[in-house]
Every structure is written in structure tokens, then in C-alpha cells.
Length: 339
Ligand SMILES: O=C(O)c1ccc[n+]([C@@H]2O[C@H](COP(=O)([O-])O)[C@@H](O)[C@H]2O)c1
Ligand SMILES: Cc1cc2nc[nH]c2cc1C
Image (tube, rainbow, N blue to C red; front, side, top):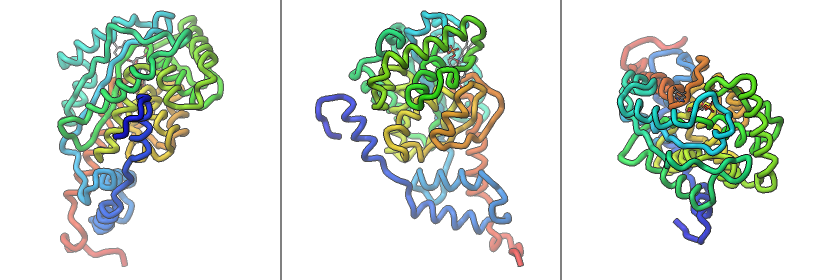
């Protein structure tokens, strides 16, 4: 990696040198898909998913044997403005629940035999309040992105990204509003259940934060450090390192998608190795998915975060891989093809 002084330069270099899909693996997977015991296309998106994994893993026979859910947790200065019904202390309390195996994401990981890693990103140190200052300075943002690159350490074949952070649907909304414009209201939803005054403060905070940082928002990494937070920076780093290590990624809800959108804004092909696990019920999620050109696998009205929607989509990913791997071909089964 080049070291030219400014921390974001290293990130920009990683974005500029991302590998593309393995076209030979993709062609081989497609050829097998065409020979399997089913009318062509009859497995719908399961077929696309298997071929996507083949192309981005660089394997003619894709795998989902060692899936990993990585949950990044951060604390947000803006939460002191009363933009969430819950106090910031819930973030740490939920970390204890993840460790004890008692949160929703633990049950989803057990269901699909996925690993779970939880990362505490300086939870005692809230980021700057985005309405008054940048969430992070450049060095801290780049360092946190580099930290997020650990998500795939030790080896995994599919990475699901999740997050935990009271107040982070406010920063996700600010980031999307900063990247894509529109009105603040287009990007702000209930989060953990904001209504009335809480929701009004949330909309005001998003509008004010974007107005304050406006002159710098042409650079997506500046948008991330000014309007985002530690878990969002780590998620962007994890998406980027997964690309370099040929690990396909499943995105979770609004917050994870907003973080990934930063990379898409830097380079439109940056999320080509990603699948959208689901569309959450959070206002803004469907719109940001449209902006980055991803179509969600599931739409179950979920709005929890933690990687739960992405983790649930792992079940579909695993089934897609199992069909691609285990089905007989027409020739093997001795079944007649179409006349
Ligand atoms: O990602 C989503 O779509 C999503 C939608 C609603 C809530 N959340 C979760 O709720 C928390 C943030 O909500 P809030 O109201 O505190 O901004 C955070 O821990 C997220 O994981 C996440
Ligand atoms: C209980 C609770 C669990 C969560 N998981 C992700 N965000 C959350 C927010 C709350 C409040």
C-alpha cells in the first residue's frame, strides 16, 4: 500500500485497486447452473446468488461453509440531543447481551450455523455531535476503517455486516442526505421508535448537520467522517477489505447500507461483491438501496439492526449454494431435457 501522508490516501488507494469478478469462475458456475436438474432460471434469484458467489469468491463451486456475522458498535455524540427513545447506555448493555448469546442476532447465527464477532469501537468515547462538529477527524476515521478490515481475519467465505449504536439511524440519515440530497424528511425514519418531538428533533438534527458540513460533502470520505460514526467507518472498511480478499458481503439494514453507500459514491463498482440481505422498515433504506442499485433479498418489516436481516438472508444464500453444489445434472439423473 502507498503511504503518502494523509490517512484517507491509503483508503483511496484500496478503492482504486479493487479486484473485479473472476470471469472464469463465473462462466464455469453459469455453465453448471445451466446443466442442473431444473428448467433454466427456475430457481430464480437463487441462481443469481450462486453465480454471484462464484464470481466474487473466484470459485467455480461457491461455498457458504464458514459464514461470519460481524457486528460493529459505536457511540454517537448526537444522541445527547434526544433523537432516540433509548439512552446511549443501551449500546453497551446490548454488547453484554451479544456476549451472553441472548440477542436476536445470536439466535439467527445459531439457526444458520454462522460465526458471530462483535466489535466494541471505543464505546466510552462518543463521536462529535454532527450538528456542531465533525463526528471524527480524518486520522480516527481512517484508523477505524482499517480496524473494520479485521472483520474477515481468520477466514470466512461470506461476510454479513451488522451494527449496534443508539442514535445511529440519525447519522445514517444525515450521511444519506449528505450524499444524495433531497429533503431531510426523505431520509429520517423512526429508528428504534421515534415519534412526536423525538422524531422532530431527529429531522432537525439531520437538516442542521448537513447544512453545517455542506461545503465538504462533495468528497464521500469527508461525508463519512463528518456525518457518520465509528461503526459506519468500520463497516465501510470491512466492505473494502472483503472485496480485496474475495469475500462476498451481505449488507443488513439502513445503517450498514448507508456506510456502504460511501464506497459506492467513491466508485460506482465498489459494491459489486455485495448483496442486500433485506430492506428494513426504516424510512430511507429502500431509497438508498435504489441509489446503490441493489435489490433486497428479503422484505420482512424488520428494523432491528444487529445484522439480523443480513443474517436471515444467509439462509437463502446457503440454500442457493447447496442447490448449485448438490443438485444432479440432467445427464447424471438420466432425465430428458426440453424437446
Ligand atoms: O439498520 C436498520 O435498518 C435499523 C432500523 C432501526 C433501528 N436500527 C437499530 O436501532 C439502533 C438505532 O436506532 P436509534 O433510534 O437509536 O437511532 C441501532 O442499534 C440500530 O442497530 C437499525
Ligand atoms: C433493545 C435494543 C436492541 C437493539 N439492537 C439493535 N439496536 C437496538 C436497540 C435497542 C433499544
